[in-house]
Each structure stands twice: as C-alpha cells, then as structure tokens.
Image (tube, rainbow over all chains, first blue to last red; front, side, top):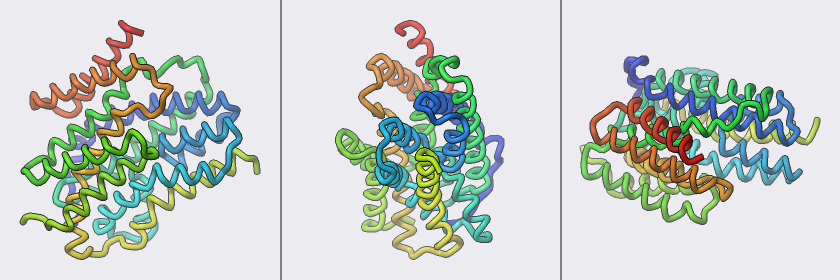
Length: 224
Length: 106
C-alpha cells in the first residue's frame, strides 16, 4: 500500500458538491443545536473536533433530553468505529512524523477516504487532505451559519443535496468494479449492510460490511 | 464546565481517538500480506455498505416524501453514471431532480 499522487483539481471536482452538502447539512445541525440551547460556540467547537454528522446529531438529541455523557460516547464510538478500519487502510501510506500522521488522520471522512482510494490498496494522501479540509470547512462554516441564523435559514433539505451523497459513493464504487471479484465484494457489502440496517445500531452496518469484505479477502487472497 | 461542554469534549476525544490511533500506531509500516489482502478487499464492500446506509432514512422522523424524492434523485444519478457521465454531473443531476420534486410535492 503506497501513496500515489494525482492531479488534485481533477480528483477534487466530485468533492465540491459533497462539501456543499456538508455546508447545507451543517446549517441544519447548527440550527438544531441552537434550538436546544447550545448557543453558537459549543456546536461550532463540536463540528471542528468531532467532524461527524451522525455522532453530532445523536449528541444533540441526548443533550436535549439531558441524557448521560456515557450514552453519547458509546453511540459516537459505534457510529465512528468505521474510522478504525479506514485508518488501518491508509496507515501504511502515512510515513511522516507523528504530528503529520495524526493531522492527516483527523481529516478522514467517508468522502475523503473514498475519493483518495486509487485501488489495490493505494491512497492519494494529498487528495485525502484536500478533500477532508474542504469538507471540514463546509461542515464547520455551515454549523456556524445555522447556529447564528437559526430558523431564518429555512429547510436546507429543499436543495436536494442529500441525494448527491449516495451518488458520490456509487460513482467512486463504479471505478473500483473492474472484475468479478470486486463486484462480488460490493454485492457482499450491500447484502450485509441491508441485512443489518433495519435493526442494528447506526454505524454498525457499514463497519460489518467492510469487515465481512476484509475477512473474505483474507480467506480467499487477492488475485495478482 | 457545563454539561454541554463536557459532552463536546468527550465526543471530540472519542472521534479523534478512533481516527488517529491506528495511523499513529502503525503509520508507515508495511502490513502482513494477509492483512493487505483483507484491507484491499474491504474497500468495495465498505463503500457499498455506505451507499446502503445513506439510502436508508436515519430516523423515523424523515417524511416519506423526503425519502422518495431522494430515491428518485439517486435513481437519476445512477442513470447518469450508467451513461458514463462524470461523478460531478451525476451528483448535480441527483440534487436537481430531488430539489425539483420537493418543490412540486412539498
């Protein structure tokens, strides 16, 4: 697994709508957080530090009910456990200092990780950093706007950007489906996630789908 | 420190730890062959799993109109991808179709 480089402008084009969607989603999150009495600073700090929509929405729901801190941490750990797997896939390509490795790893999101993947275990770290930074800016700026403006922003969902997310990942998946094996692994991921999504806690279906693909790969080996 | 700031910090520490622990512990090291194989094969399955969970409403509070309009938009995006259009074109197409349908059906 090595680092590769590609033309950032070309590879980042698909990330722009994702960053725009993060901006819109961040606005909705900021408005929601402000509505439960979190003010402006706390939601913005949360977006900067946590950078995970699902975990943050879960936290706001718990805050609104004055729930347990441990409940929030447990839910966030389940929702973000997939970052352990993603971190493991890029770890061999991270060769810099500890600060540099940690800085890059903090920019791992679903989108930045997927768009940086070049196939066969190779990752373009420059693309990962740029895409992650772009999404972090969109998400945090959106949170600030939403928290300040509150209900005045209306419903960001009317822009339809939530439909762009799955298409982004489908487009990236398309570039990886080069043979029967990769098709089989993708189908395995779909079936596993679909079987779990109805009843398993959020975050777990994705993690298990990746783990099942990984175990299958370890058992069968990779065709050279 | 207030309750909400404790949650912000606890959540931040949890998220940061999950992101950086493996890159810090194993960064730059060559992985065993069996693990390389496993991780290479995990990627398509993980991305496919992400698509499934993104298509599934995150909570029961999401209205059927919102879900159906999003699915219609995703369908338009899939058609564009199948027609060899770029990811960006497919994403914009999906968003436009969804936005137009929401404008029409509320």
